Length: 298
Ligand code: ADP
Ligand code: MG
Image (tube, rainbow, N blue to C red; front, side, top):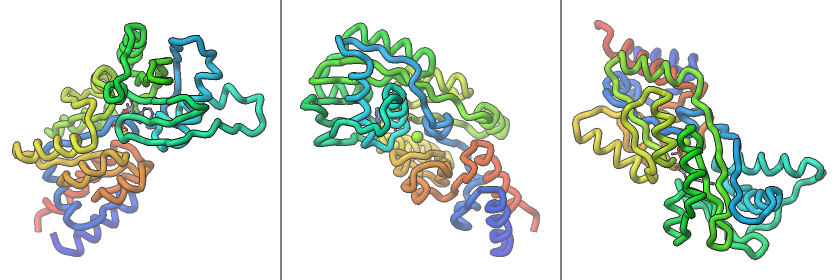
């Protein structure tokens, strides 16, 4: 393609909300044979809501959520926002909601958060985070987690002073059009894979809903990038579609990194292409644009 054709292609993309950061990305897009999708915020809407809470100690729900919100209010994670929104509803009678102070807050990317609130050690996150903190998951909690996962919800674990205090079940539905985009890609002979930091149960339920056969779950950020590299060394030209900080290494590793416009700044910076409308149909728009720019008869 001529520089003019690339400029035209990039311009058409921009007018459709597909920002292409350079000629190389536009050129590579039509060669893609495999696409790795992040789950949360990419295949799903990314605005999760709390749908159920199972408290396993003697705490009342308001007290439980106060500790959760005080910790999670410091996190940017969509799941954290869901818990804080839910906790707020319990305080609607209060004019200014002030959460108790959280000391020593730490966020462990892809796993959860920790803090000291009201002299209690709070840990909110997934099973691997509990494992790393030597917190045992009782049978009741395990059952609540499995129930959530079977419904494609994410079950997050709340530990207070080293004991599991409750399970919060959070729902994040698929984006409209996600299923169709995957099926069009399949017809284009492009393989779709889902890689997520979420647990296996939830991941498999969502994959089934969206029509993706290959899943990698409980993947830390480095593992997402590793998966991309593994596919590349097996001969694939790989695109990665993601929205989170945790997707950045994989976005960089991919032949074509595509960020969801509504995603984090770090993901947008790491990507070659930004899907401003945050929908998955535009993955196909980008590939089509590349095809028309680079496979046109000259
Ligand atoms: P994804 O790859 O699906 O975008 P992440 O890698 O961001 O997911 O998170 C993986 C898992 O880690 C979540 O499903 C959740 O169980 C846990 N997690 C991460 N951040 C938080 C948080 N702030 N609060 C609770 N759980 C969290
Ligand atoms: Mg995500």
